[in-house]
Picture 1 (cartoon, rainbow, N blue to C red):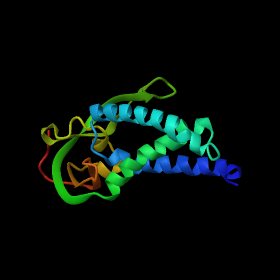
Picture 2: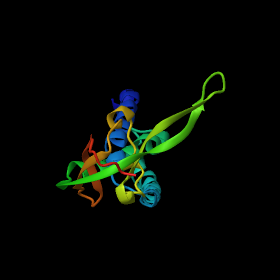
Picture 3: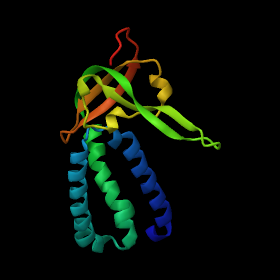
Length: 175
């Protein structure tokens, strides 16, 4: 019975992985080094799932499902639990400036196009090692602003998560 719905199951798992990645993992305070360590743990966890759990679930999953869908979902669920059961909100306010992205491309006439980046530099280089929490999608939200207010919470697994952020304007200019 489950075998006939395996493609639907794959699509649901892919959507869940993408949702968790973009809404939770990118809002977790993780440095590049922590991410490398977590990737190593992920690799060991993948081997464990493949060697010991896979033989019992072969009715539901094919071999490619483990590394492409199932193991990432289980891995992402740790971040979900960290985020969902976070506590002790703390507000931190920083002045910021935009980093210059320099040349971002060329027009069809080979004229260089320059632009602003959505990655910010925080006052006193706060969170300098944490690229993901200093990068935003929408430049228009930060246009003309120079203050950011983060609301952090301590996650269940000890990883700090961003629950909210807000841009505002102050007359003090951060350089």
